[in-house]
Amino acid sequence: MEAHRGELTEVTALEDRFLLATYKKMPIVAERGKGVWLYASDGQKYLDLYGGHAVAGTGHSHSHVVAAIVEQAEELLFYSNLVYSEVRARAAEKLASIAPESLIKVFFCNSGTEANENAMRMARLASGRENVITFSGGFHGRTADAISATFLEKYRELGKPNVPGHLQAEFGDIESVRKVADETVAAIMLEPIQSMAGVRTAAPQFFRDLRKLCDAQGIVLIYDEVQTGIGRTGEWFFAGSEAAGGIVPDVITLAKALGSGIPVGACLVSEKIASHIKENDLGTTFGGGMIAMAAVTATLEAIENDSMLENVKEVEAHLRNRTTEIPQVTQVRGLGFLLGLEFADKAAPIHKGLLERKVITGTSSDPKVLRLLPPLCLRPSDIDLFIDELKMVIANLGSPREA
Image (cartoon, rainbow, N blue to C red; front, side):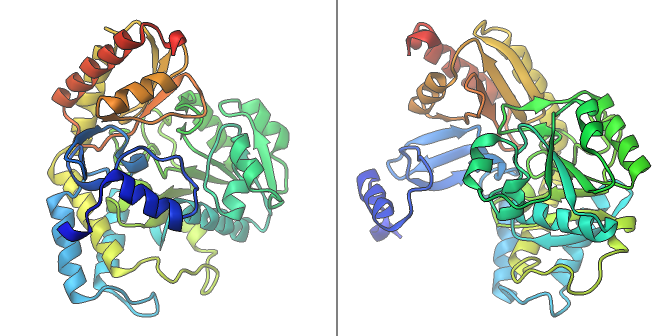
């Protein structure tokens, strides 16, 4: 392994030569991780408050998850859904056991965008209709149907020519939904907390009104919980929570933290929707693979064993309390460990300054919002370190306006 380790300039030169330049990257060669820490090839360590875009839910290389992956790899790396599998059966059983009671069936796939594409397909099959309502500011993935359901304009433009059958409403505004919710609508799909739009939320009554409208008009309600699911809000799911007004949708889509870094997505589905799905309506080669299924079960067990849901709530409260010390933070948006720190001016200089001080955070399409998507094992002492570094960055900037 040592012979293959490279300095930043060597690795960046190789990636720039052989990979498409699809992302603006941080000047870090990631080598290993543990818990909330990411270690670079130059020996530096970074407090990771971004979690590889909300993926490292249990923390980097959680020992229970790693052990489960290794054990499964020694038995069978993969076989398709054409055979039964105990590890797949156990993963489905475990995921269904933590889901809201009405969501009793699981479909495993490979990613969040694939989960959303399949959720929309299920809604169309169940309703016999074609159109799907999604929301301003929403992001649902980069594949054809999912990016066409995305009304975060930059991404929708990238997806042109867009797939037909997508209607837009205003997030949090039930009247805008009623205006487009006619007899052609198969589903309403939404991120209950819009992460990339700047961690935007809606009032619980909005979710109650959506459920009432869907029930009255035979519309399938889908929550895209690719980011909010698997404990990130301090509950297993946003669905059914107090923030959701207790409302449970017909389908929940999942990915990101579901496999602790092993690529996996899923749809949790009600019996009503599942009853319309027959053989060959859905399909995936790699979805439900053995390594991914071992990772899913171990991830859920790790969250339970380490009391991470309770930890998220406690540490969120600590963060909110500590941010009151920083007048430049005008608002803390979101819930649990999907948080947006809104600043009086642009967040980009603060993001850059924190990275220079070895703290990884995220930006958003709202230029004033810094996103935090840390592992669920983040501790109060980590928040204290973050606040100290944030104060130093702001002091060094003098004012965000000067950057």
